[in-house]
Amino acid sequence: MTELPRALDSLDSRSREIFREIVEAYLQTGEPVGSRTLSQLGGSGLSPASIRNTMADLAQMGLLTARHASAGRLPTHAGLRMFLDGFLEVGDLTEDERREIAVRVKSAGGSLEGALESVSEMLSGLAGGAGLVTTPSRDAALRHVEFVPISPERLLVVLVMEDGSVENRLMRPPAGVTQSAMIEAGNYLSARLKGRTLAEVQRGIADELTQSRAELDSAAQRLVEDGFAHWTGEGERRLLIVRGHARLLEQMQAAEDLERVRLLFEDLERKEEVIALLDRARDADGVRIFIGSENPLFSLSGSSVVVAPYMDSQQKIIGALGVIGPTRLNYARVVPMIDYTARLVGRMLDQT
Image 1 (cartoon, rainbow, N blue to C red):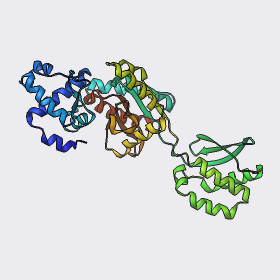
Image 2 (image 1 turned 180 degrees about the horizontal axis):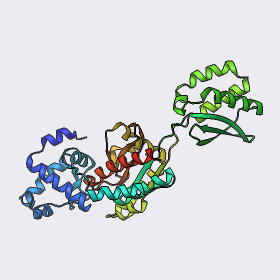
Image 3 (image 1 turned 120 degrees about the vertical axis):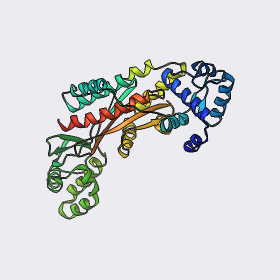
Image 4 (image 1 turned 180 degrees about the vertical axis):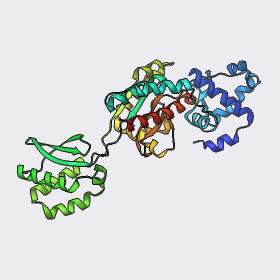
């Protein structure tokens, strides 16, 4: 695989200029770029033959490729990465663009989920891809835990949070568990875990189970153990909101694009993996870009993901948002748009 810093350093001024012009033309049109087209643009002042020689060298380095032998060149995923890291100039949004985004985020009222759905749809429309938003992770403290039998083989675990929200989890009851054992287990957990978040509960599982053995009868103990394993093993409960699938179909410019979009739709159904990808933005300072094969989830569809975290007033990351689309996204426009939207969404959630 080409080492991008070394490849960038090895390019002379002519190669850099031709490479930059090819990628910029590809991002603008989505089409392969030929030597005659570059020569007519006149930026380099070179003949088509000279440009073809340089393009061949760039292809040998793994930065350009062609759909077939007689076609023009387009950047590989490695080439796009080098362009983004070494050549892309990201400007700022205009006042009109900022105002438009602010108005649309502010008008996304109603429930939290409904507001984030509106934000996802807005991102899709502005960026020309599909909008992606993860809802905030639940971090409310527990107030009460109760086990409710709904059938011989199903128990409903009711988790009441300090903020008044309620979460329900289904589980299979241990053999022979009685109504009195359910009450005992629920009372024990309510008293023991009140005021603690699910994340804190997960970290203290071993200690809680050790202590429960001394304080509960055998049936209630089994119920506590099974309940711990079930409702703390699910991790953070969040939703992935995707809007704008149809815009991906509008982006098709070649027959093979249809298969790529079909693969992308399949990938987007794997919501937990998409959430995990967006969570990688939590480790970044600002916007992150994943190009095609850089992320195994979207390697077959060859898609790009531009994502940023959004934070509350204490600068705690509570979710992420972004767009997914073809690698020919207008990154110079999309990156500042995602960054600004993420900041606005953080402020919006602080006010709800």
